[in-house]
Image 1: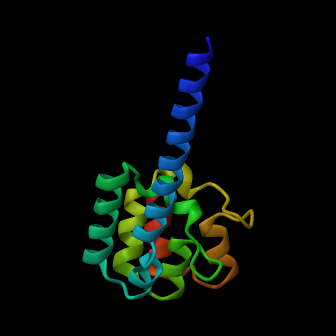
Image 2 (image 1 turned 180 degrees about the vertical axis):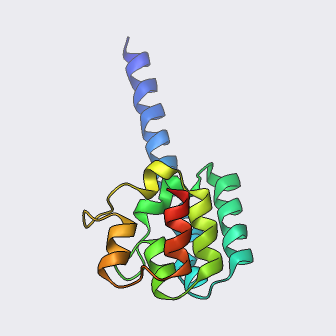
Length: 131
């Protein structure tokens, strides 16, 4: 019985160590994603998304809400910086339910864009077409 308890503790400790290392690595992998979105570098964003998916089995919907670029989400950052290519890619890759869901401030991306006068943006048109 004591041997089972010791083995369980060792396994639990080992899994916690590996889990914390994986989170740090994901953070490093996503470190410059805001810069890529602001620069409207679709090719680099695509590479970043593929690398995160292959290395950590995460899709954009899995880490989208955890990434903040100066207090804004990735799609909001793309709208503010007229990053049409990267914004369109993210809109196409995100599930419709996540695009229409409220973000951290309680507003959806389309409601936020309307409030900030960005409803004439090509990204807003792409977003409304997708929804």
